[in-house]
Length: 427
Image (cartoon, rainbow, N blue to C red; front, side, top):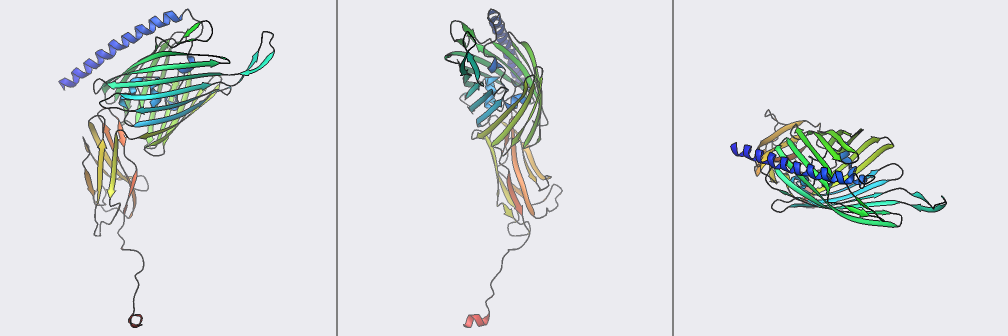
């Protein structure tokens, strides 16, 4: 207990010192930005994918998507599986932002990731000094974020992005380089703090004669999880020169293992969305944000594989409590990043009712025997049942095995048995 308190105090001190450093960097950068007109890189600072948009952009203390490095690169340290994420945001006037992200969580080595974002505008009319039409042109911006993050302790992580941006308008184009820094700290499994400073030392872009430098931005916030991680509430404060300070907040709740609903508030704009898990590996995301110029729709598709996992398999998957094979054996496996905190194996009937639940602390056992009875010891009727193993580690990460089926049958063998008569034998 005393050791845990020391870790918490040390984490708070580190987080406070780094937050102060990030704030000082932000203030100094903001003063330098006062001499420039406009806010370069505004598209990237305001960008939100479907899940972050669903919670109002309050994502600096959240994890789960590789694109989370746009808010806080330290979040990579708390991911559990390799992940590929595709997303597309449709704005007004034919403008769109498309993204591709890939992340690999590490244990001994740092977690790494790559995120590519591309903004493309609609066509604009090009004219000369006399306002005579000369055709059309568009604007294209790209950002490449090479990310790395490492756990300093089980609760505390540091992360950084190497950010390369490119801007092209008509026949002009330029590129620049900058750095993002982030921290994340798990106070307790249900409470996580996050902070980041973006655009440290750039990027600076010179399209023609004057440098345009992305202003530094400070983000800090917290996320509180409840109902064993099924729900969360997140809040965040962003500060950058020009727009100033803005508040973001939102909530997410998994009404079912396959469906999550979100509501958020981004600055002055309400937002909402949902996620649907096609399987434990595939997830579809959608969000909509109401803005003055119209609705923004965002779509995303995620695929998770490898890394840290949980698995369960019933052998045999068809058994008869009254027959020779009277029980089935669930083989359980789990590879968690942190120490396993708890596990549960639930068996559900066709109506969605949990008929039997096995659970415990720590690592799940190698196998569990089931005799086809419910929690009260009564035999269950014949039919097909689904089961799934869920393991939660010390970081609060939830690892879900694939949803599988097992069948109970008390009927005898089916089919016909040929009868050979004495006459047929003599012939």
